Image (cartoon, rainbow, N blue to C red; front, side, top):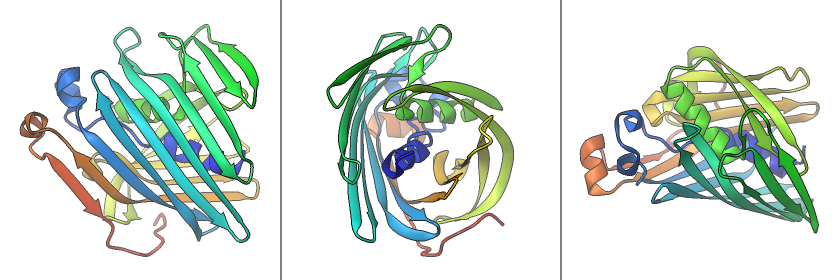
Length: 267
């Protein structure tokens, strides 16, 4: 997997939309907050860049803007993606409407995709070629919708789940298991977090930690495959909610900035 796409997969699968009280509120009440997350990126424990994602709700859809820069010795690349994700009453979950992806520098290219309303069909354009994919059983999603659904599944207490993820030139199935909760060192102190692992892929290891104390957000993720050893650490989060939503949530604005500059690890 290309480094930029590996980074996006690593974080796209982890950054969600909901707040802890979301399940008790009607959709239009909790789908109003604007959220921004910034992650430090490491390759073999060396910092190589950052990744930022901003989520803006517009009615029953959310627009997600992702941006990252990676600088490795003489090579520098940038990644930008705009996605539209929505809540589907029919599927009782988050689905993807469309996305546009641009990579500059090394491995430059452009990709865009549109998804059917039920997620069973996608049309992808990549470097002048058009590809069509279909699914007979479960919806096809992009990384943003998958990440949102993982977080919702944690809030619902689910222990295992699987998704079909739209890639640049294919659709792959991902299986995950919740391995329990454990204390880890983070940029927000030592926190108790859910440990979620990708399974049924013996050639790689993807692990994500979601901390209830930090809005159930992804606070750490690692990805290992062959010579690739990636790590992402949440550095900052900024959550802004309208006053009406804030009254129900008890906190309208959550602004968190890391105070630790260390590279934490699992104890």
